[in-house]
Length: 83
Image (cartoon, rainbow, N blue to C red; front, side, top):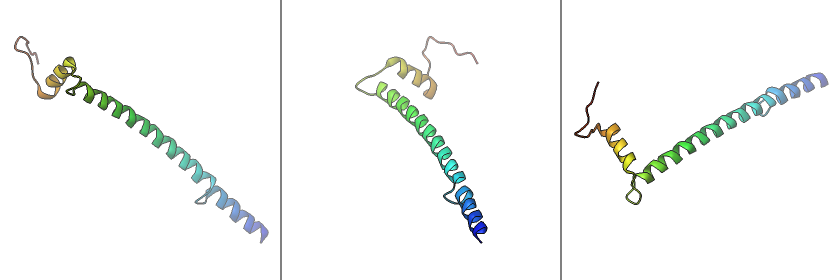
C-alpha cells in the first residue's frame, strides 16, 4: 500500500497538472511569449517612429517621397520606369 501511494505521488509530482513537466512547459511558453512581446514592442517602436516622421510637427520629406512611391506608385515627371 505504501509503495502504491509513493508511486502515485511520484507520478503526480512528475507528470501531473502541477508536476515538473508541466512547469517546464509553462516556462518554455513564457519564454516564447516574452520573445514575441519583445518583437512586437520593436515593431511598435518602428511604427511610432515612422508615424512621428510623417506627422505635421516633424515632416521627413524623404520618407514622404518613399511612401508616395511605394504606396501610391507615384513617380516624378523626369523619371523613366523600366519593368
